[in-house]
Amino acid sequence: MAWLEYLLPLIFLFPLGATAVIVIALRNLHDARVRSPFDAHPLREPGQVLRDRLDRAFASLFLNGALGPIVTMAPLVYGMGRMIFANEQNWIEWTLYGLLCTALVLVFCFLLIRDFQRIRRLKLGLACELAVGQELERLIHPDAHPYHVFHDIPADTYTIDHIAVTPHGVFVIETRARTPPFDASGQEQNQVAVERERLRFPGWSERVPLRKTRQAVQWLRHWLARECQGEVPIRGVLVLPGWEIDTSHAAGDLLVVSGEGLADLLDTMSLGRFNEQAHDRAIRALMTRSTLMESRDLQRPSV
Image (cartoon, rainbow, N blue to C red; front, side, top):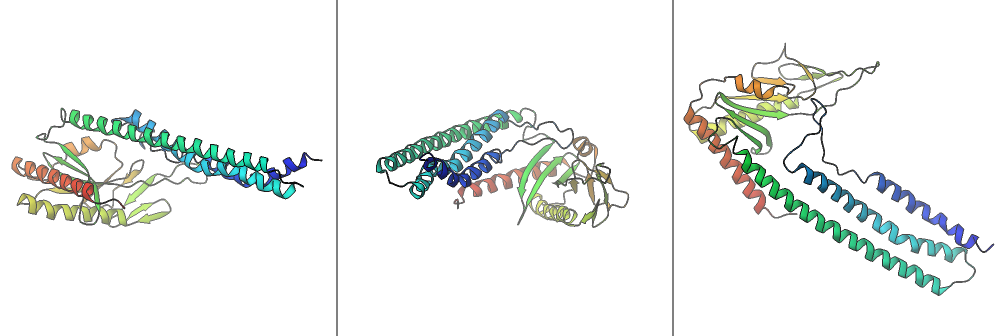
């Protein structure tokens, strides 16, 4: 049965086929789309369409980069199986296997080059949209506006998630994401009790989020006092999206909230005496630090 000489070598392709199935199953691993923990709606940012296209381009790059070697090796692996089961070696057949491998290498190289160029174009388009979006935001949030929000401000050895400057004070806002567990009946347990030094979640407790928030507040208080040449009213806020917060035993120096209505809460909360000169100096100092840190990151050589 000469046909067995062509059928049996397919056994050697099963490991490659299994690897290819895993690669295809993981093709959407790079997906940056996120949903709001408040209402489960997709969160949209400036250039969201380009972000989605960029995600798909990265998925295509991953798929072609991972499947390329697998598909390219398939003819050679099949040919080695033919060597084992065939009674005679046909060099013309081996030449065809080699030509097929070469053609597959060229095809996947072309696909990878196409994906690379597509990603580069999409990144450029996204950068342009973000730049325009930031300029448009100044229409509603000009530099002299009494409300100003900074993101990812570097401290000495860590990064502060958000800093909000209002006419009533400065707020250090740290965010922590935790997944609520389910009880035996399938009900979500999303109640967390706040103590002075500890957060009591259902089934576990944590001290680090409160400590890190206090550390950020302490650093910012000293830094702004030096930069503004005077004390600035500051308060820390720890946000736990999606949780019901019990603050009956919480300390008074930090706010722990779920995040719903956070803007209104900060707008109505007064932290103390905060005159216009100190307010403007705080904003300028934070803008300068943010700009300097961004410049250092751009000048730092990539590894």
